[in-house]
Length: 288
Image (cartoon, rainbow, N blue to C red):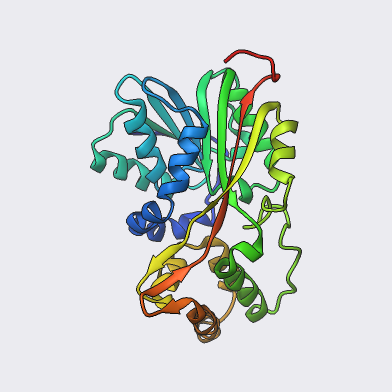
């Protein structure tokens, strides 16, 4: 898995979360197993295909794609964080896949027009784009006519109470006024009903589907969940970063106390609902 540099892309806050995200790959892949299978199927990823993976992170789904397309196929993993791409490369090598390359780029400026990929995917990345329609158009430009796209994003705050607790508590401790939960570039920005489908249509996709998928996270305790977030949850880490360490610790303790409501005799289970949005490039009567 060979990384390719992209000019003009600077150090990114996600670099700080890269180590934790990669270290928790097993947890993430288990948590997102079902929705990832749905995403890959919605994108019609099959043996021999060429696939673009945008906001690839530490490469969990990249490895799944590489195995699905097989040695006759190829995957290009793109992310805005140089460090997380380096870890994705190492993880792919350790997994024994050799049909993956990486490229450092902003999803809104991929620069891959005419690349003619068969499919494009994005798992929990699209919602962080301040202008997601630009990212979708960039992905569309990289697809062949009739190529398919599938993206996974968070649904509404009420369907994701743990994430909502993290965000509202972090903002309160940081002395910041909570903006609309659907503010562009934030965790729930594409969870409002109808938004993802509208953006897919604006980007030139047809046969659009947006389906909710439950994705509970099972762990021994709320503290285990916060251990994951404290090292991997870049949006929460960024909100708390300006605070003195004792104030940060107070915020994390507050979160833990609130998250304990999801503890039972069987351990801790945090509810989540994700959306899988998919479509095909071109008019509805086009042939793939």
